[in-house]
Length: 123
Image 1 (cartoon, rainbow, N blue to C red):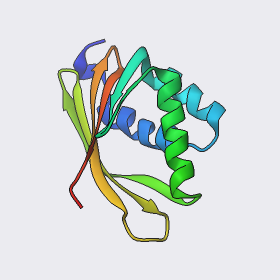
Image 2: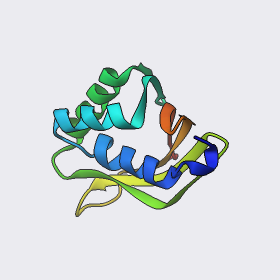
Image 3: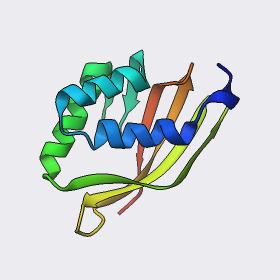
Image 4: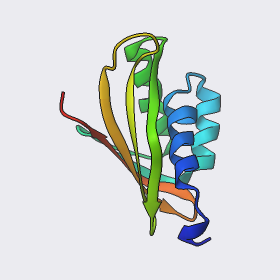
């Protein structure tokens, strides 16, 4: 698979919707197995998360922490080339104000996310 064959927008949007917006743990784990390499690493502002199960755990805890209507919403189209992609997003309650904005930057290997940086914009 060449970098031209990768749909970066689809991959990063699927990560937001099927991993970080998914409240069902089994569905979230299945999505992570499909979207991420065997041993992915996620870099958050305050921690480094290693492995598929830990990424699932962190996503689930985040959703539980912020309530039942909290969602991540993509902004624009993800762009990428040569194995690196970026998707801007905002998050907050579905009917409420935006609580946080940021971007996901992903290193992609063979069409799957190998490393993911979660970048938060200053408040």
